[in-house]
Each structure stands twice: as structure tokens, then as C-alpha cells.
Image 1 (cartoon, protein in one colour):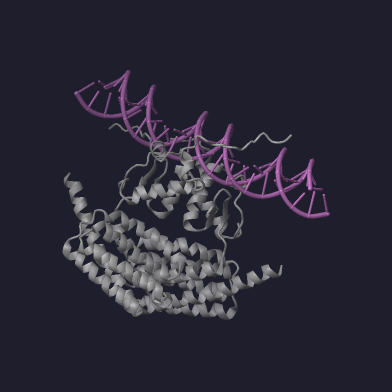
Image 2 (tube, protein in one colour):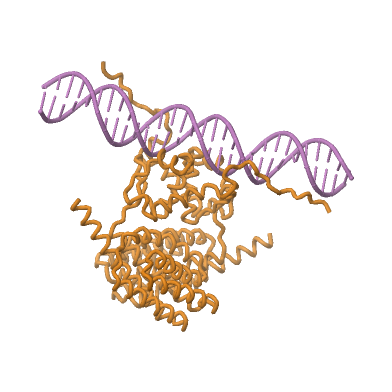
Length: 239
Length: 239
DNA sequence: AATATCATGTTTGTATACAAAAAAGATTGC
DNA sequence: GCAATCTTTTTTGTATACAAACATGATATT
């Protein structure tokens, strides 16, 4: 039969094809988002288009498109005729975000208790014990990683992509604050304990309890972030 | 020697300068969003950049930025190397959106019962009776307008701008489906009755009850939209 | 010297030009 | 006559060029 394999290596000369290949301007969006979320671009930093474009190895046009995209996510703010800045990390805004995230996570917990299958829960349990190990060794970065994964997996178990997208978008704001939260051992232990209860509620598919636990867990996290933000603010004022 | 009046009437030929003047590309975002939400640009319509730019009286660059912005809101979908299309109106997606909206409105109701002042509630009551009047006269468009305003005002009373933003973004999807919902008198009467209870719960600041009512109200609305969507789908298949 | 006005430079906003990819159409081989 | 490939055309993606707005620094006048 015919078929001469029409699509073997159609673009061998493309420089970026080695790694990216078919993702194009979305790369810029992800790169810029990472810079902001990881704090490399601090809150209120002016986004100079020429400089940033050069840094990301692209031109102003795709960068501006990425900026507009992230503006809709709330990570950057657009100033008419004055460009864009990284969205400020205001305590007031943080409170708002946490309240909404609380509702979204509570919903996810409820849905997850209904929809998760046993394999899902086994995966989450595995993540939980990884997290415990890193907690025991005091490895904060690794702990955070598994912590995030657990919450993400619960979110995924809810089986609602729209919910997941909203969660991700709002959670990006929280992630930005994470790097400045100085976790005391006491608080840390408490958070870990809460996670134990969360896993337990999920295991028993106790949706009502899981909702309450997730809400409380988030409220406690808010306290941490607020303390860190206030300390940060004071330091800035004293400067 | 000074000055030959360099900037007198720099753009006398600019057509749009008469009205807009200082709002710039955000105009394009709003225009495009309206076109999509009002159904002028039907779901799955390919967004031809040249044509659309001409239609909106601008160039491709600002239009593309607007498209990226709306992509983040979920109103358009980006196809790599193939441009963008108006996001399809899938029943599955609608279900998801309504579930999340339910959680957001419930949260808003709870917060509104705590934070609203008496003037706020009086305003909402006024809107409610306007809505009743239009319902009595069978004026659907006007009814929808006041209906939307009531829900928006409750949202505002929650005093959480982040919550409001998330709500607006998701609600845009629902608005798109509205124009095809063929409301029977029976259903319509039921929705109006529910609104009466909602107002009552708010008046008595019964947060728990208001939450439940808003969730139910939304669930009923979902049923309507789903029926309309299914009918629409069947019509398309039969076509 | 202080302030106001002007001049310069930088940055954003928009339009256009160019390149790569996809779609549509024509041509050739079977 | 049909199908597959090649060509042409359209459309997207990116870069650049130009114009308006903003910021900044200098000059002049009181």
C-alpha cells in the first residue's frame, strides 16, 4: 500500500526543535510565570519589555502576548501607557485569595471523596509518606514539593478540569508568598498532623470532614503567610 | 528658538479618538469578549486575525494580545500554529462550570450575610422588585438583566474582589449559553420563586440557608442550560 | 536660587513586513 | 478517473519600524 511516510522529520532545520518542538509562545508564558512565581521577578517589578524579551530570548511581540495572558491570571498588572508590573503581594489580596481557595479546595475534597478510586487514594497515601520522610529530615523544599502534589492530586480526583484551572490560577499567588514563609518547627509539625487527618478523611471518604479539614488547613496556612508578609512589610518600612 | 508647536493636533485623522481617547487595547478585549458572550461569534468559530482586526478597526497586534487575554479566561482556545477559535460550548464543560460557580456563589452568599449593610440589601430588594415587574410582563431580556444584577450585587456584598473576578470569568461562559435557553413559563415562575427565597434569606442574614438556596438555584439553571444544549446538539446533528 | 518651560531620551503602543507553517488548488503518474 | 505529490496561496507567528506618551534633565527667566 502506498503511504510514503509523509511526516517523517518535517522540520530538521528548526533550531529550537530539539527541546520544545511544537510548543511555541506558550513557552514564553510558562517562563514568565515561573519567574514571577519563584520570586525571581519580585512583586511590583516593572516589566521592561526590551530587557525581558532579550532575557527570554524572544522579541517584544510574543512577550507582550504572554504579559496579557498573565494579566488575566492576575500575576501582572497592566498600567495604561506605562507597561506592566509584577502584581504586588498585598496582605489584603492574600486574605481574599485564601478565602476563595478554601471554598475551591473544600469542593474538591467533597468531590474527591465521591469520585476517587482506590488507586488514586493509594497514590496520595504514597505521596503523603514521602512528605513525612522529608519532614522528618527537615528538608523543607522537598516537603513543599510533595505537599503541593498531594493537594494537586486531591484536586485532580475531583474530576473537574474547570475547578482545577481556577485552583491553579489562584494557587500561583500563594506560591509566590511561600518562599518568604519562615516555618517554625512547631507550625510545621502541626501542618503535617493536619495532613494526616486529611488523608484519613479521604481514606474513609468522609466528604464533610475532609471539607472542614481542608478549610482549616488553608486558614492555618494563611496565618503563616500573613505573619511572613507583615514581617516583610515592617522590614521594608524600616529599611 | 523655541518651539514650532510640535504637538498641536497630532492625530487629527484618528477616527476613534473622538470617543475613547485614553482607553486603548482594553477596548479590544472588551469588544471581543462581548462578541463572544453575546453569541455574535458562535462557539468554535475560527478567529481570522486579519478579518477580525479590520472589523474591530485595529491591527493584528492588539487583537492578538486581546485573544491571549481571553484565552486565559477560557473564552477562546489557542491552537498551535492554527490560530484561535471561540471556545466550544460543551455540556461537560458547562456542568463543570456550574459546580464551581455553585461553590463561589455559596461562598458569596455566606459572606454577604455577614458583610452587607442594610443599604446594600435595600438595593438588592429594589432590583428584585424591578425583576418581578419584568417577569410579570413577560419581558425576558429585562428580567435577565435584573437577575444578573442581583447576583452581581450579592457577589459584591461579599467584599472579596478576587471572588468577584473568578465569578465574572466563569459566569461569562454561562452567559454565552443563556441566549439559547428557552425558558418555559413554569420554569421561569420557579426561578422567580427561588429568588424570593434568596432575598428572604439575605434579609434575615441566614447564611447557611442562603448558601443552600444559591446552590439549588444554580443547579436548576444548569438543568435549563443542559436541556437547551442538548436540543441544540440534536438540531446540529440532524442538520 | 527656584520654578517653569523646553529639549532629549527612553518606553510603550500600534502597524507593518517578513518567514514559517497550514490549507487549498493544480499537476502528474498510475 | 483517482490519488498522491508538488505548487500556490492564505494564515499564523515573529521581528522590526514608526509614532505617541512618559520620564528626565537642561536651560532660561524671574
